Length: 249
Ligand code: ATP
Image (cartoon, rainbow, N blue to C red; front, side, top):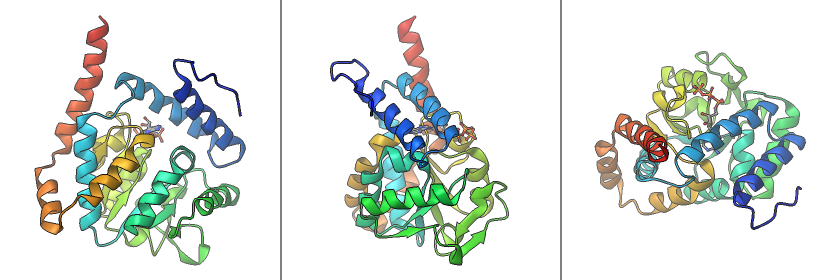
């Protein structure tokens, strides 16, 4: 691990960057995951590296959708396994929503490395790593089409952070509701998802848990969802990015 001085103005961002690099060396993160992280970092910079109201509204809607779902699943990739394993697993264990490992750059080595991370943080419900339960979703062309029949295959709501657009579109064609976390409000995933949380995944799970815990029954969750408009949220995120540039002019 590289020694990053605490007084460095971007110490936290550098620590996260090096955690991703270490994750690549231990085979949890794919090489392309480093590039995806860089794109996320750039957008985080443009929103001031903090959670805004448009993300809070999307988090509340996501909590409501997960609360109402018959069969929700949280999809896990290498970057999320490095960036927020503890908070993600705490959310899964407390809400009893299973975690499913689902990888674009799929290999047994990466599957095993991510499974080990999840065991280290005591995940109760891990799917996607047992070939006995594999099924394929025809609408997805990448290796991400291989899913767990107890998980994403039969899910009505899938939480897919840091996602590529093809998979989101495939899951939607397969009649699933999609919730994503994506710092880029312009990505195909952000534009296609039912709920887009434009925020850094590092900040999201504690807020999502708080919101989930505060839901006062099904009618409360239904009311939250009925008020929600994803296009409005995406527009607010883009306005925030635009205002960042305007303020600097
Ligand atoms: P699409 O196919 O949806 O247009 P893409 O080609 O950018 O998107 P990827 O590179 O697979 O797809 O996705 C990575 C996405 O995750 C990017 O949009 C990036 O902004 C976002 N991202 C990366 N790191 C984080 C993070 N820590 N928190 C939230 N989003 C992130």
